[in-house]
Length: 327
Image: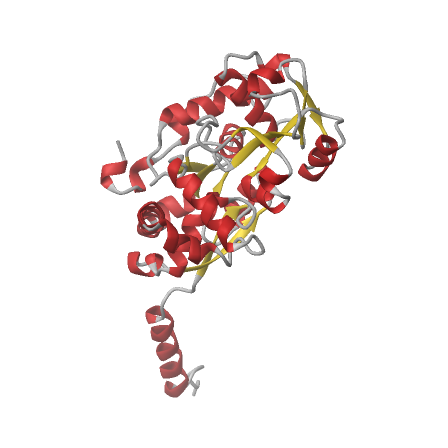
């Protein structure tokens, strides 16, 4: 007589294990944010984690992975288990244009206010208009630095082609060239500006409230997340919105939360930076402002990231934002 392959005891153990697995809470997840500790764009994620806004919204996001930037950050988001992250809109637009399966689901930050355009003290350059015919240091072609000077030049009525863009490989090289008077001006992130001496070492010719409305950060989501876990995506965006509101309304408290994120930047500099960004209306609650993306695409064409116009409406999906932000 044939014996059953599994005993009733073993079967009971299996059933119990399956029930436990089904009822167990989802594992905690990390969200990828480009240059998290070096750029204040990702501040709402640090605040949302510390203040418990993600758990309140029903999603267990407990950490942040810092992305390298550009296409590498986009690829990392696509490959991640979460399928969501915050990257440069330019990198997202370029990736979607190349066929990557994702959507822009929110705008994270609205302007280049996290940067400054600087010269050395005593320079005859007093404004961006004076950069005409001068050498402007950038890290690499098609970088945010190049996009910054192109957008800033157009904003003041200057032809971007009249500015000599000198690629020096990285921000450190750009600063060294500026300090040795090899170039005349450059742009750097505000955090680096403060860490390297700030106004005691450099002269700012265009600061946070003056820089163009060119968004440096946007939320992107994979099609898998959008179709398989729409409630999770809504929760992430709702929690991030609450964090932005907290930053705007309780800037001093938010600054204290962020001190450990931006260490070793002194606490007083973190506070100064956050107050400047709030004054510049840097952080977005998420609304996808099409003029901002149109400006991004326009500047991408000027620096050679796009060779033709793209259909931005096909690249976005605002339906996971809170209802009042979807219009």
